[in-house]
Amino acid sequence: MNDESGKKLVIIGASHAGSQLAFSARQLGWTGPIELIGDEDVAPYHRPPLSKDYLTGGKALENILLKPVASYAKSDITLRIGLQVNQIDRSAKRCTLSNGKTVGYDKLALAVGAKVRKVPIKGSDKAGVFYLRTIADIDGIRDHTGEGQSAVIIGGGYIGLETAASLRKLGMRVTVLEMMPKILQRVIVAQPMTDFFMRVHQEEGVAIVTNAQVEEIGGDKRAETVVCANGQTFAADLVIIGAGILPNTELAEEAGIKVDNGIVVDEFCRTNDADIVAVGDCTFNRNLFYPKPMRMESVQNAVDQAKTAAATLCEQAKPYNCVVWFWSDQYDVKLQIVGLYEGFTSMVIRGNPAQGRKFSIFYLRNKTLIAVDAINSPDAFVFGRKHVGAPMNFELERLGDESTPLKELTAQAKVG
Ligand SMILES: Cc1cc2nc3c(=O)[nH]c(=O)nc-3n(C[C@H](O)[C@H](O)[C@H](O)COP(=O)(O)OP(=O)(O)OC[C@H]3O[C@@H](n4cnc5c(N)ncnc54)[C@H](O)[C@@H]3O)c2cc1C
Image (cartoon, rainbow, N blue to C red; front, side):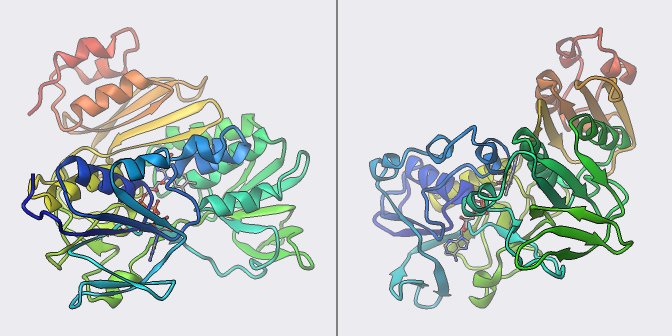
């Protein structure tokens, strides 16, 4: 139980981080009012299915809600949706809302996430051109899908490729235009992994064009073509731009909260204001498992930071200190990543990336396991979650030997 009895916690942003923080604070003994304010018009929902099962129609909104709507009231959490916080007055400890009203706080949490990076492509204001971050974006996209129609996706990162897979499932002709020499350039380091995703998408009928400099989206009032600098032109009934995201920092910055590639927080999710924490995609955060601050864009980070911040607010502070992980679903391929690649000195491949759809890659810094990419290999992901950070006290070739069960190696991997 904390000694903040009766004090009010206001959380700005009602998604993975904000919602988790509200429930965790309640669980850890926050006794005062908790108000969770979000500017989207729907109750908090899982964002990852947007480019996957929600886009294909496999799941409806009620299937992707983070919690049943009634559970907020049950935990005495006031959920206010469709409302934006426009300003924070730190000296008065008060926020101004888009409806003109104000709300006071004793403690404030910023869980404001990220927004899409807009790119200056001529014609990108035409009908049929979309960015993809919210359920409202997908609802718009879904009105422009149709079997046999053409979709062009600008950007070959996770969101672009997941969207490509979903649109193929809907029977569309799909082209992915990537400006870099390879897809997933920002997030994947191993060439066999890049080649694998190129192959899978080609097998599924997606055309991927790399080194593509998109110049213009053509058409009268609505998108009809995408034109590249070299003159290549692609038919497009639908254009989706996936050019990355930027953390929402303006609100914090205007309030004088420290920002640097995200809202700066320490390992307890504290900002430079003792009464304000920040969590999730909006933060430039400190995870003690890693040597330097970083910005993450993942559900794991949003949820784990939210738990950390809740503990801080409830005076049970425990630093954020864990191995990070992530996943992506494309067709029948589940990619699970655990750890970060930075500083790897070697990699060991288990299985054959050039054939079939099941293999894994282990990344080592000398003999220490630092990351694992697992393709349809939950055992490798579990091994990674247990052993990233541990020395592999056996011949490394054994990691790549599919006849040696990973469970057998578990006993020999000792935490250093
Ligand atoms: C299509 C898609 C697929 C993804 N797939 C995966 C995946 O497979 N695996 C994975 O780990 N991650 C995935 N991600 C990333 C993951 O969804 C994010 O990391 C996660 O949503 C971060 O949660 P968050 O709560 O920090 O921020 P967000 O989810 O961005 O939520 C922030 C919320 O705050 C609201 N807000 C912002 N400013 C204000 C304000 N001033 N007032 C009120 N409300 C405000 C926003 O509208 C939003 O609702 C995906 C993301 C997208 C878009």
